[in-house]
Image 1 (cartoon, rainbow, N blue to C red):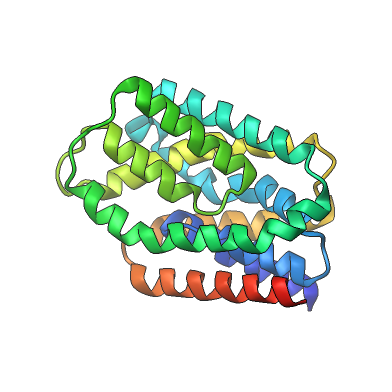
Image 2 (cartoon, rainbow, N blue to C red):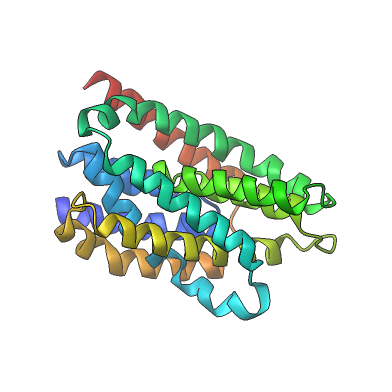
Length: 243
């Protein structure tokens, strides 16, 4: 039953990651519920996250982000992983509930961010854009959950998109997240923090969920998805604080 629950959690995570965002909360809480240390659960989630975004690779030709943004995001992600690699597991366990709360804030903001980005004009200069993407990468390595919202903001404020082209912007975001996620996964694989048995169990359902999420992007009601993620994250944060 534990294995089935993890498989289902990975599948749901894949759908949410590509269709909306914040899906890693589901897998993270499912693994910690089995007794896995929070830092190990986080590292394992980060290792399998690229599976959710693999289907975004087919959009790389048409919706590829600028190379400087990819380099900045990946550099920041490596920095975030390096910080976690020297963080005591007990410290991460203590702050994990508050990390979930920060992710809730980003998920709640996502709907408003999408509406504003869809009708905004570029306001960030190249240097400010690189710094913002570097910071998003650090967050991706440290926390991961909610990074999609940060990247969407940076892309929306740095790139000129035709009005109503949010779907294209989301695809470009997913391509960028795929590059960052692959680098984060490779970095975590070398830290010794990953539970490889759990990672093997989560990989295929995560890929399947990501494929389905790509198909459903824009068709699922965002408010319902966000409400579900928020409820899950807040419930998980309370549970982690009280256990």
